[in-house]
Image 1 (spheres, helix red, strand yellow):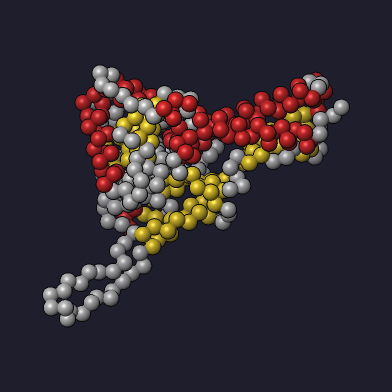
Image 2 (tube, rainbow, N blue to C red):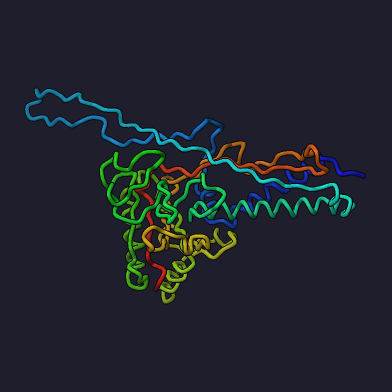
Length: 342
């Protein structure tokens, strides 16, 4: 008996949620973003618009006698940061030849399940590579945390260098960072560990935690993504001390340490990510009230029904994703770099 498109489609729909959960469990940024409010959903729109307050609305008048004229000089404080959606799709295909060679409903369904897992794994790797290292070759329209890619991209969020217009030159949602005074919300914090994590690494982490907390309009750093070397260095620094771990992280699929209220998690794709300076990024400090992943409500790895491909004996379904990484406040986030050596 032939397998209907409806049966294959229902098979994909039934395992899709499990695959999405697996995706989030194995990718630290997506996992923590989902559980800590770092993912927002929108229903549509040609672009994603985030209004940012980048100047003071009015001026202060000091009163001596009470009869001084009040200055009514005002200006619009809002500037819209605009982000293009990132759209991508990957197909799942099965041919008539394969169906005949694997006769039986269970055999065919197993083929579809295996291919869906394979496609999900591919999407997981590419999303993560672009988000943390800006080195995906196919998802180049997706934003990235890496603000200093050797490719010369000028839109990455977390830059090495002083939080000034001269030190951080990347645009944020099409806005030049220079439109706000140095040290304000469009500039992330950064720390150079000097190539000696054992000497300056912990001090740098403490400094960045204090600086981001003092500049966070909401929330705090809840996730520190570390390269493999950075994670090993941090663990080595704590070896003779007490370490804390949130028991909720035990089921996340990877080992997790803590720094303050933030989980410290290694990310293999962050390791060796190229930078313009040649000094590798070691840790990203992420406040999910400052950086978010926006996804379309109908494009969160949505699975289409199976359909026959005209002119062939094959039929296919598609997995579709629509979203973008956006920044609301970068002063509450940071990068520690040049800390790969202990």
